[in-house]
Image (tube, rainbow, N blue to C red):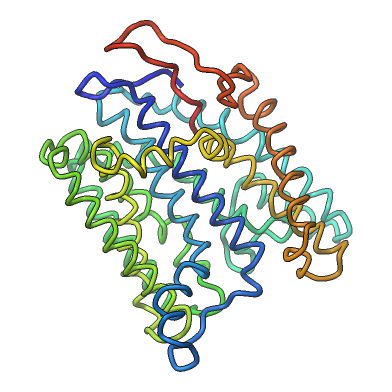
Length: 391
């Protein structure tokens, strides 16, 4: 990815650094959730002590929200260059996104189809068509059976396909109006899905978490990118944005945990999800200003965390297959409380590093991909280093 410059002349390298750190946090949340969700379920307020209910439970049961973070980050990262003046040519954009996402996706799909060879020919054909055209989530097939996390990757792929159409609508109705109306429409779809198909134990369903139902997260990320470039006042209110981030994320985590425990009505989750996405957007905007939260910035720019974030696509697409394989061999899921979990993580990182290096970014040098050594760009505004690979 070529370096981008913001209006202050600062390389987008700094933005990429903390965005990759946020991706690293999000993928760790998802890994934790999929490994331990069976053992950590939300408990209603009547059955829990107040300290656990208010402070421990929201953190332990909220790992699935890492996917929400990915959705908001996708909107921000894809729309930021456009807000800064880059011209999006739909055919070129879609070709680049296809080259970026589809090779690894279809390799994983091939493995999924091999794993389903014991099904009848009509069933196998149906699965092949569903995988090939990314037709999930859909009724009866929300979670792709062989690799359930692919549902959210399917939504991400359709985000990219839809972006040119959103830009076309913006050209007619304006950016803010298009984004706000889309967020509102998506929220209505999400609430309808919750009212019709709600299940406290599974916080996802085929209506609420379809592309229309999850467009709000993507558009909130786009709105954050627009605000950063087009609303100068945001650059003067870093501490306020950080305070708003803390309030939104803490309160939304608590509300979502209470919702999953059955203490709040089903439809209310739409508001908590919107609030959580808004909190992530505020965090991105606050971190855009290095002086606002320097400790947080330095933590997110920690090189190993950045590498994990840069590898998040590979980690995400392989982790469930490996997790399920070990659980099947062990006979139960309690192996995650033993040293085998450490072996699992090492194997996952090795497999992910291989696909990240040779499938995702075969054209990029190893030193840049794994941050082994700094590289330099021509002087832009002071001494700069090359931008990190991004999704």
